Image 1 (tube, helix red, strand yellow):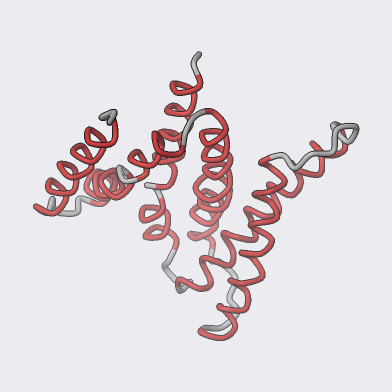
Image 2 (cartoon, rainbow, N blue to C red; image 1 turned 180 degrees about the vertical axis):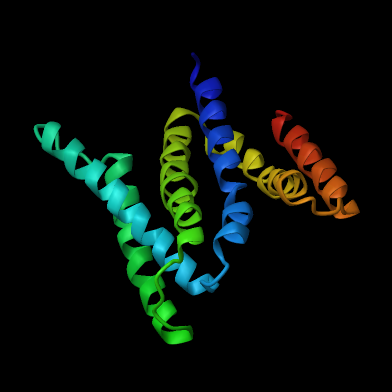
Length: 176
């Protein structure tokens, strides 16, 4: 598989996961506010990716290089700390309720965690200028998710956004 095709597959997986953010947030904020939800999601991301990073480091310690998994783990350690400060400043400490556990886990593991690994793999596979237009599909895709999962009404802005995303992708693909 060519680097461009591989990068495209990775970025499409990443975008599909990122587009789930409003879905899991809507499902997961019954008693948690946005600061609390962000903290718990970041903590889950850090714990899951941190464990995987430690396992990878233990096995591959001969060649100590910063792998994407370790870089993302460091990012989520920082995000966990920042969201903890934000939660305590703007809100109160609260544990997720039973109905919020699954959305917090999905957001922490899939939406936040693994999506960033796919993004880093995509960036390693091909040029960022090729990948960038795909990221703009995210709002269109999450609008579709909200319509499908929550029967949200279709707004004209969704159609306009889709046309603009496609146009931007076509313009980006032109070689000057």
